[in-house]
Image (cartoon, rainbow, N blue to C red):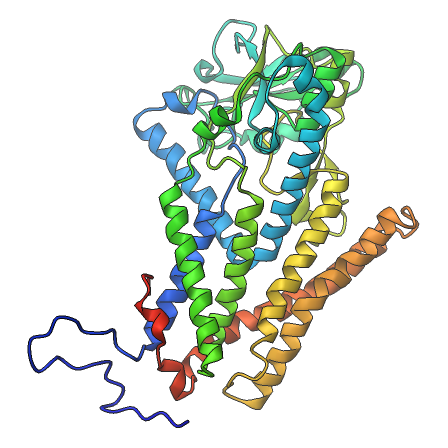
Amino acid sequence: MKIRFKDKFNTGTTPSSRTNYVSSPDTRGTLDILWSCLFTIIACTWTIQHLNVPEQPGIDPRELRGFQKLRWNLRGVRRSLKWMLVTTIAPEYILGKALADLYAAYRSKNMMWIYSQLDGVDWGLTHGFFTNMGGFVLDQSPNETPDGKRPKDLPIVELAPNSITVPLLRQNKSAIILERILPNMATRRKVVANKREARKPVLEMGATIWESPILRAAGALPYYNVPYHLFADEIFDLRQSGALPKLPKITSAEINDKSKGDTFVKLITSFQVLWFILQVIIRAIRQLSISQLEIAVTAFGICAIITYFLLLPKPKSVDVPITVKEFKDHIPIHQREFKTLRQRVVQKYIRSLFVLGDGLAGEVEIMGSHIPNDALNAGRELAVLHVGVSLGGIIFGAIHIAAWNLSFPTAIEQTLWRTASVMSTVMLPMMYLPLLVNEYVIRGRIPIVLIKIWDIFFGSLYVLARAFLLVEIFRTLFYLPEDAYVTTWASNFPHVS
């Protein structure tokens, strides 16, 4: 059916007389399509974020005032914006990470069941999520250096083999940056900081780093973070060894009370995503043209919905952890009961994908440090992550294949789109399948270097395919056929465009 437009695509006319109701225009513009797509993406990326507990500023964040409070809040905004970008670029990774987090929380629930019954405490999925995001910590009191001063009051930072504490102070431009020399702490050296700067809580680097002289004498990693963030496995081991007399007595309702998830915002986002998917389906049924950008946002929205349901029990935007045990003077990290804490292995996932020399898991340099948002305990969680990312890639790519016969500016671009969409669907399973087979079938017979080369090769092809799709969805927006600007009855539903 040929659709004719009058008056150069005017979207409506003023009624000639007073009337009680005027329907919405039956056409839409290029900006209407663009804004509705961008708003849907922004709403999804902001709402589905369930980030880990951030690195602590050396004092309780609730005690910050004035400019220090502003800097803390800006730091949180910057962190959220960074992960919004990651979510926009790689929604399949966020989906896979959510599946791995759910698996870890479920495993934690089963693992803790016996002790939750013995201790008479609640331990569910929410507890597992909260623990693995760094919500439970060990602390020591008083958190002071040997001379009795608080770290934020020290004008001098001494780095020496026999040093017991190393407060992380914010340095001025003329001083040596402590972060750069931290890995080589055996070097005897003094870093003189500006007194005014030293009295400010540390917002960039986090809380205090302490040293265990006993571990140093034994040739083991001696440095640990205060507060000491715990994984669920570590809490289980501490409870099993007797270092923790009982599991933390806190209910799911109390943990959710610390969560800052806004139900109203989630509802608005859900309605927007559902409306967007509905109007794409209606356009397909009525055989009206759909823009490639709308196809991409539909794929993004479906991944976001799946991710959202996977993370339903997970708290959102928790800034301050809960102390499960406070030790006098120092945390006895050297004792036998804390052995598992000294063997922590954390997956630095994003870096390990693209750096040939990095293993799939790396030991932490400072025990008990803040848990990064892309961190996983090495083990089956990593396999679940790979499966989740592969499933996310299949879902995301398969929806792009639905644009197989859409209108393109040139035949070459249509061919490239078809190729890129198929590659986006199959490349991630091809990338991770040898890794899973090597890990769980042939038990590591393939050298890790070959696995990494394989990953980089297929990962690079996947990135190229996704990059082309990203560019093409915006380029084709300016070459749409006439019927792409016709609206459907879905435009009468509440939405943002």
